[in-house]
Image (cartoon, rainbow, N blue to C red; front, side):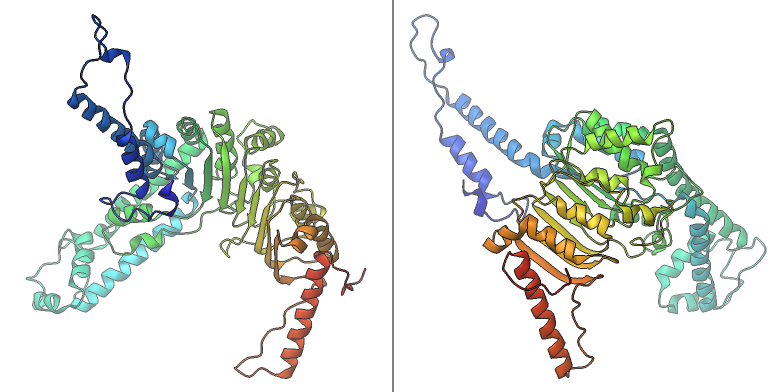
Length: 512
């Protein structure tokens, strides 16, 4: 089929080559004779009407366009914790053409009711500073009484206002507080803050009710149960651009006000146990599996602290984890962009028997490798109790820019399949790690494939243990002889490591 090398769809008026090829193919086919084309009296074939043939050809074209356009209508659905997202998902997935073209869900878990007071103070400070700057530039003072800002009481105000550089911003600032040069005082400021924050507070109490009642998970899973193909689920804590634009529209246009509300969510807040959106991480895959759908890919771009403590009330954690492992048994691609600390959720994700591709990568620096609220977390991690060894089915393993213990790294390398194709370990910080054991596992799992060139191995910038460290280049453009000598020694040691993993008979540079 010529569609593999066809150019992409650059505009709505240009059709890709696949549609034209299938259209011409359908139009060139002859419609076979059927019993309805014969007379019921003499059984002689009747002449085929041209209008009916044109209608049938048009139906074939429309059917072809519809079948080819369904994957392009809504391949990914961007949702957040709100009634609006649930209604949008239900409305879109009712259409079978859109449902059969859906490939993934991106769910934003932004939830910030705990920062309402802080954001309110930032909100007030933002507009008070703008109001003071506008009044100082115009040379007027805010009256403590309920007195409007008039042109008669301030001679020369119109000329100053006309000569100001940012007149539009000044009009918006003064107009917001005083209804376009109305009563600008402390009372109007307070009323403006209270009315604006009422909208903001309603938005987050809506999320609170959806999470506590479980209505969000149930309704979203019921809508996704109509999709009969495997889905990719992406959890993130980023505020979507559309949501930020909505805040801009609510709060007085493009003034940058929404930036004051974009704060990190209180994932690690002990004052609100059980109210965190991390419950969705556990409940949503289970609900999707119970509704008849299945997940093929799962990506975590959010911190996963306290996931073991975010189960619904009245449900035992052991039962919930068993249901979660059953719901994730069809996962083939797992990506954890911000692991922070390992927990039972990561273990359930990486213990899928059908896992093929695993990527453990970095996330936001404010979340990664910080203190964990779970008791005895560090000791449990070192003992390896947070990780459960999966079946050796992984063909592509990528670990980069994370801090990981040996008790976690060894089971991950043990997941490598005998038919692995790609191993990428970069910028890895592993304290108290015995690299000799790690290298032995790599040699046993993928040594023959690396030697034959069927598997690519990439090791660089590994820290911890006795692994050779790449020397830092000296400052400036001058490269001295000591640096060149250390770099040559490092390259020689790395070559010995790669040759030993590939099965070549070389001398080990490490002890043992």
